[in-house]
Amino acid sequence: LTFTLTVIGETERDRVVYRSGAQPGDTVWVSGFLGFAAAGLALLRGGVEPGNPAFDPLREQHLNPRARVELGGKLGASGLATAMMDLSDGLATDLAHLCKQSGVAARVVARDLPGIAALAEAARLLGADPEQWVVGGGEDFELLFTAHSEDRSRVLELGRQCGVALTLVGSVVEGEGVTLIRQRQDGTSEEVAIAYQGYDHFRNRAGG
Image: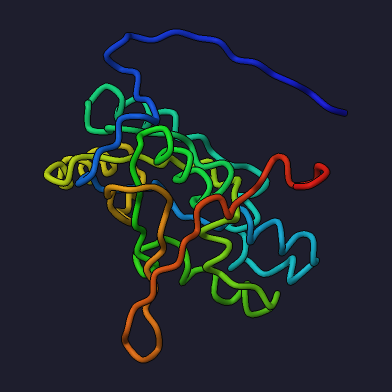
């Protein structure tokens, strides 16, 4: 069965947060933990340790994702978010969309991405890369937003009020695209372009 649902609503003008409001100097935030849904799907497809309770949060995130409705509403009402959207296609792709709409670029710090450590064992069993789940897995249905750098403490407090972990993962800069900053084993860093490396709705079309 295939179902299509369209939801149309309205809100107060001053509570609308678009994708186009990010500016250089803003910080980049995400809610919750990324990559859990992708890891849960991989575990279910592979039939890997279905009785292991350590993997329950991963499977649950894929099967029963929770939309951050309260958090989104409070961010809109507070005026803290300069740009915002949900994370459905993966951080790399959705942040690239936000940056394109805002006419800016973003730099993301790999070590700050929430969820990688919790994915390590599942990734080992499946021979997968936990960073790829976090950056490009998709279907997290968390929130991605930007905020002024001086509002960090206010953003964290709003997250505590909603009972949702909020993590600062990067910054908005001039230019275009999304760059991931990784630490090499020798202590040096590398920058990798990651824009549009998540789910692609047109991937299976001819020439895609």
